Image (tube, rainbow, N blue to C red; front, side, top):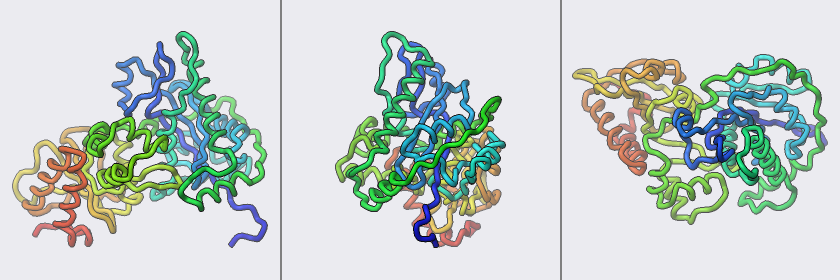
Length: 406
């Protein structure tokens, strides 16, 4: 229970990633792509990736972003000091700074650095969806920041500087006081309460000679979905651009299209975070290790599941794919299919929390899984439909986490 007159705990989320939709082009400067692309494909188009750094106020749609070239990393403490000094909406230093484990491991000294200025660094729990939701929302919002244009051909430094200025203006707009026209009155009130807090003065943190270790976690947004976003948009009765604008809150969709989209993808909207969360059930394809780990955390509630690879108790297994059943407690099962012989397939036991190994199931059940996955991957509309039908056929088994031969 809080003491009357006592200020509430201030909490912020800190995240770093490869920008999903923004790249630098030698002729056009910073460019935004409609859909996320693989870094290898971007390189073939002379597109250089950028790093996005962000801070979000916990539970509120107030964020501060900055950027750098992928090979010009900014020390975490430098990013944080700059944000707390210049970002009005953050209200200065927080009491708690929440990060994911990958970021904490990338700069092991960050815990001590934060403690020196009275900040408690906390590692987000695997079941905590708020931090990854903040990053997703920031990635979506970043593509709409481009407002300035340099004459001629902007250098990489000039282009990033303009992008950072656009991000600062966006933060100033999101931090303005007064009505926002949100449908959630409680959220409006909480935003006003936060912005009414006094500024907590920044403090100096040494940054000389400091760096952080990059890793595959930076580009964890690549892969896992069977169908590209363009097909998803078409199935929902809209365009890819309209879909992207809707997700980033730049426009609205009519009620029938919006409800159709939510049903198509099995997504739930978190108004506090301003982003969508996948609920499933789905058929997913294992392509990138971090992406697989991330989506598994989402649909399993942070690993609250008993996942296992299933094989037929008799007869040959599928020669092309291996099938991993994600049986989350209290939710219909999803299935991850992994190509045989691929490196990621051998890593699945390490990538999926609480993996229970290989289980033999009856031949009819195994064949049903194979045919269900094949049908589900054909179109966006088929994915959830086929998996819901599959869940209904085996409701007693997934409810009890029992997948043994008949």
